[in-house]
Image 1 (cartoon, rainbow, N blue to C red):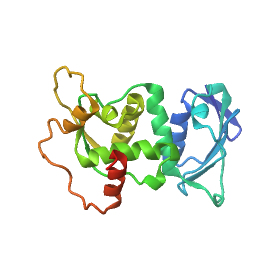
Image 2: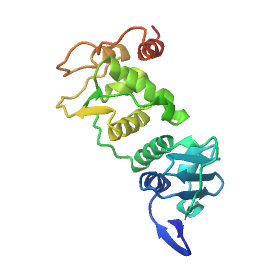
Image 3: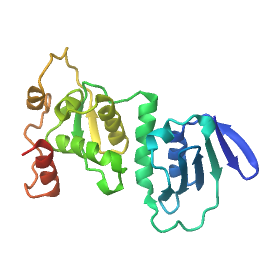
Image 4: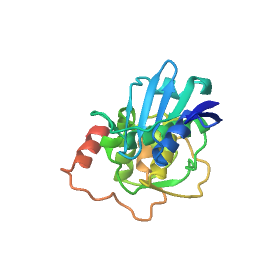
Length: 221
């Protein structure tokens, strides 16, 4: 359990670190999170930013609840160099999905890109995989199980990021009914990315745009 100090009262919560950070960011609760052996996080929800000295986030999220202390603090103005709160929300949501090992995005779902997230507001460690997924979906809608195959990426990470992208409204997930899938090569998978796509063709974008350049770099063209 996590220790939560509010005024002079100490209470316990069963929320993991990811849920606690998410709640602090979304419910305007200025908080100080101290994780033994990892560092601390100061959340300034009103100013939409946070400050941290944590270097190893994986270790922080794997910490036992007894190692985590949460204090409600009346913060003043954040120091210079504070980071955007959206970055913390993305990281918390991602680790929450990984810990729960559950996802509303099924392997046979047809996934379309609605919008690109602001890549400057993402945690540094998620910028590359999120960019790859969005660039692939920008090119054409894809069936869920093909995305990690085409990108040669970890399926667990891809599924977690799809769940987060859906939660933030950046993708649209449509249920499809598909039979057993034969083993396919990455090239074959890329050819069938848009199976069930009624729109057909690729999303038109000027070749000289930033997104276009990112896509060509990712696919090696």
